Image (cartoon, rainbow, N blue to C red):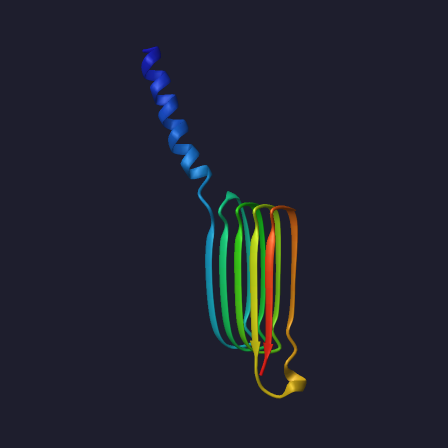
Length: 128
């Protein structure tokens, strides 16, 4: 009887451990005018977020906490805005903004805040 209880406890622990370490994943694709996306992820490991926006007045915000987070934001249009906040360690972030149209309308804004260790981020902004 003790053996059965012990084996049941080990099996429960093994199954719940896998679920506890499963990461969150979010994918957002938007085409149009006044696009807005906000993603908040909190988990132990492997949170990933991918946001792609095409249009005018794009806005994307990503917030992640945990271990081994990854965030990718790609925006094409006019008046792009993107922010990423990450807390934990081994975080990675990439923001790419590609604007077109009259130069006075091409205003890209991007910001990344990371708290932890082994973090990396890339921001690429292009005007045409």
